[in-house]
Length: 275
Figure: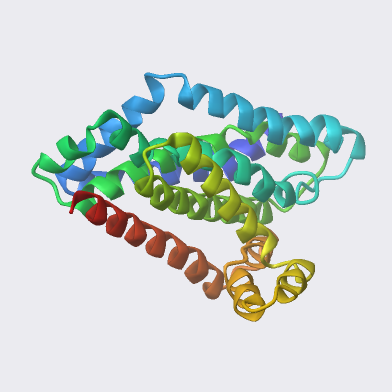
């Protein structure tokens, strides 16, 4: 019972506060953004997409943590090793599936022109769609609460560090989602958008590992430039520092820069498509 109370106070309550703040921010946004947001969020839940993604993500993340990494048997009140350090690899697979339909589906159905004939600015449509997909990602992370309850049952973990891990995970997932949004704006095929986004996300995870940088250095001609670029977009070091509770402004700036640039690239791609 104590573990359950701790879970509610230190995990579910902050999550609820974040949800309330998000709702207030959404209410303050232009009506056009809210319209697109509601339309897109409804599309997720009126099709099997959201439910399938929830089941797959929870099956992978919680399933591996409990049965492969044996959180219960370890008896340790720590989830960075069995849970957080593996989330970037799960996100590489799952997040492109969340965002692949953002603009690809509109292009395939021929409804993108209809969206932009509405009295809304392009940025409003982009932001509204992105926020709807972000809600799906947020709910995925919230639904992993059983593992938090488990470690509180096993001992007395630092729930502040665990919360930091969730903040880092959300920032990483939102970065991958923004990249997927940009990719989906360039193609009408959801499969193509998914595969390209998956590759980019994988490169972003691997980019911080020295062995990968050394490997790209050996590519003749563009090796040095390619290695530098891959290293600059590498997310692992930023993610792992935040997930361990070591909050740095530069890490937030890094993720926000990826999100901002990717959403800007989405706008550029849509402008090119419309011209």
